Image 1 (cartoon, rainbow, N blue to C red):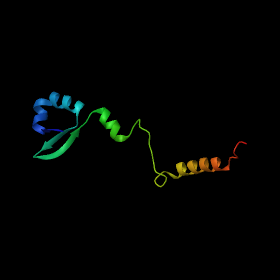
Image 2: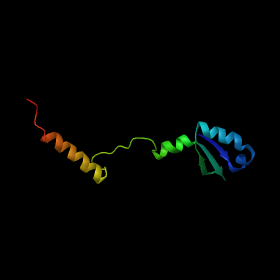
Image 3: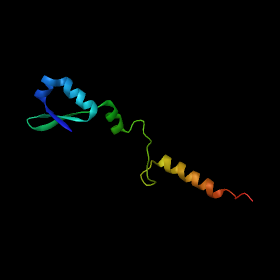
Image 4: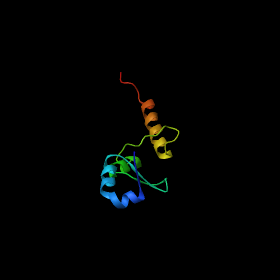
Amino acid sequence: MKQFTFSDMNRSSGEILEAALIEPVVLTKHGKEKLFVISAREFHRLRGEGATISYSLHDAPVAIQSELMAGIDAILDRKPDV
């Protein structure tokens, strides 16, 4: 990850923004991380937007647990074709 100071941002903002399109960039002030600059694609990836959400049975919302259990019950109640 590339690192720049706030002063660098004043002098080379174009270079810093171009770098942020490739990988996250950290901006520092007095040697401490203050801001991260990331691409829109990375932002959406981190937010999980456009991705499939998965759960384990134990951490799934109640509505999803109920739907899953109803589906399992329906499968178990089926009579095998003879």
